[in-house]
Image (cartoon, rainbow, N blue to C red; front, side, top):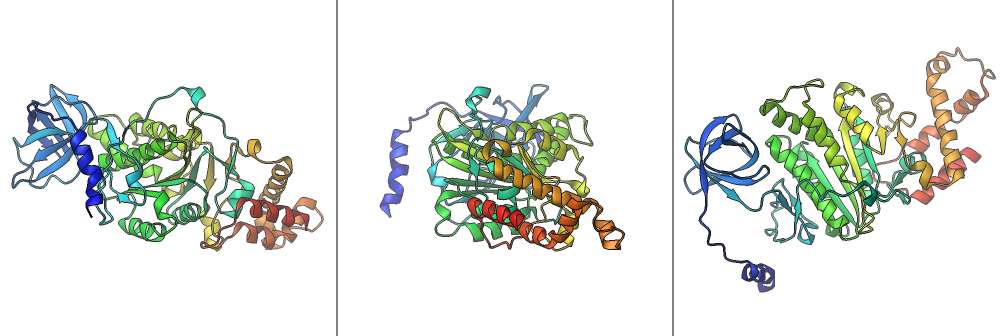
Amino acid sequence: MLKLWEPLLADLAAQPLDLAPCRFGLVAACDGGLLEVSGLSVPVGALCRVSHGQGQSLAAEVIGFRNGRTMMMLLGDTILLRPGARVWAEGRPGLLPVGEPFLGRAVDGEGLPIDDGFPIHSRAEWPSGGVRTTALDRSPVRLPFDTGVRALNALTTFGVGQRIGVMAGSGVGKSVLIDMIARGASADVVVVGLIGERAREVSDFVERHMQAGKKDRTVVVAVPADHAPNLRLRGAMLATAMAEHFRARGRRVLLIMDSLTRVAHAAREIGLLLGEPGAARGYPPSALAAITKLVERAGNSAASGGSITGLYTVLADGDNQDDPVVDTARSILDGHIVLSRELAQRGQYPAVDIAASLSRVMNDIVSAEHRQAARQFRALIASYEANRDLVLMGAYRAGADPQLDQAIAMHERLTAFLSQPQEDIVDLVASTAALSALLAA
């Protein structure tokens, strides 16, 4: 038992004693979750504590300045908050806790454990906005990434260090596909950011993936939908900072962010609260810029040899693929997987729309034979889907189109290839061999 306290006692002994007076400000105004504090000068991004009596305090984050006052946003509810409450800075501004002690743990947006385990003690910190590097520090994607999903491995092959988006409407199977990839992917560390999702999904994910064998290489950062928008945004930054920390140590990291749209919603709430105009269908410029900044932090590092393979889910509101968040994500990501509600209604899972899905690095990481087989498969699927109504009505006359004739004859086998039970794992070699065998038959 004493060994658990030894690292903490050693750090306390090494920590210099700070005898400087504690500065504090006073709450001057409160509008929803937005606070105006007078008399306290702290940088943007700093965490503060707001006293509300009875020896308790609320957490708040600095988001800006206005008319000589510091603007803060509470990380919780405003209940029991009163005018004139004392506010003081806490911790080091702009830095987030990271490190090995987080492996095997589930934490919230502040890095505090939510899995009923021991408190997490880590002295390692990472800038919340990441460490800015030059473009040439990002080495190119040259190695294939095994997802464990046959359709993705064979037809939209991912690369180590690639950023991929999973785009679909609600209830089409994004979370199920993410779950399959998290279970079947090969990576040294898996960092999962469950941002703005249902609390039930968080508990289910932790129960499935925090098991022996996988637990010691997995970190879960969970901030459900009922939490404050700045806490949701902070959770996304913490998950990305955690992945960057392990990449800097030469690890291959799989970063899963579910979902990027909820991150944009949180940034939108903060932007509108600060008075930004809603430029693109209600999204202020800062909300869409937050997506770009977050995604660009993933990738390969030439300095450390580590990598972050980013997997981001994107919710298409109303199945609209032209939504600003979807369009922004598609333009900045290195590939996208589109899930079709129509395919899901036919019972095909995962409901991957191969014709609309794309991996921008596939041509650089697979052989010419694999590339040709994938193109042939795509052509058959596209030909059948374009003429599906004619075929079902019996209006198509056999022999008019040789490619369509082949697609009709192979339709059941093509659909079976795209389908995969949730509990199955098919590696990259087996997926490629199955594709070659299918087209050679």
